[in-house]
Image (cartoon, rainbow, N blue to C red; front, side, top):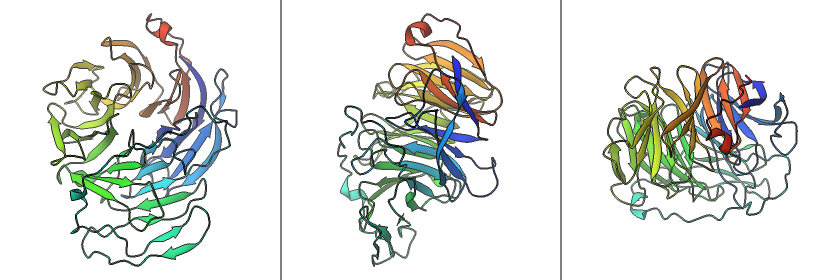
Length: 401
């Protein structure tokens, strides 16, 4: 693999745009003083990351964040938001949502994805737990008119902290504050990409419907793993099943049935990351930072008694994983500062290479199987990976770092 671009960005979490190769990088807590920020990066071209040449990243836009960033998630395109929505889970318990308006790019065939409706059981939206805000500031998408929407504010913790801020491109369009601690779990729905799941301390997971940011009420659904759980990762499957990773283990949830908990996986204590396969709705991987979960585990919904396979055992655990969108390869960055490429289908480690400095995140491009981004050693780097036929022949790649 070869390095294509890099930029100095200490301690960043990453997210690729869904249809064009723009990359968002958010500064984590402790990496910089003061409020956080999210930068959207591209290569030399205006329309995304241009491959094949060594160059520096170009900063397309910078989004101000109320606090350091713990996790980023970028939704697929919606009719109202051509580049999707970019959400950040923050260290202060808030979730911020931006409309990342970027330089105009040619439409791809099928650029706009159809929204598949996911019907949430109405029993979960209890009348005893109102979601109406006492004061909501809304700026319609077609203008700057602000309106105050009066409602009966709940006297308990269920009073909505949703705030619609605006809708202009590149600016924050919404923010909510229902988590008591850092929001490390964050993921947009796979089929219904207007649904955003956020998870944090006390095992609390909230699902927000962002289909219409200007309406009076924002529908929410909540489930909890218990006060002792500290959620570190969330992921939606192709069939909109949610998996959560926490210090207490990994759980699988279906928001359309009651009770929502399908299964709590054994042998997953201190899980730090969970990712459903983008190609197989029955498979996901679970990994952890700590010695009691020092490997990447492959789980299958049809066989939940034990993991199907284990890969990449590392005494210092696994920091982050990312699936290739077009085949069965998986990237992992470890606590021992290595990148490991796994062939999940064959159950093999294709290769592993050292990286400079401490890894904080790794993300495969959502659009291309040829490149991925890594945050390590105070820099964000873009890499080009060998084509699938070369990788599967186990050729040792040239590494340029």
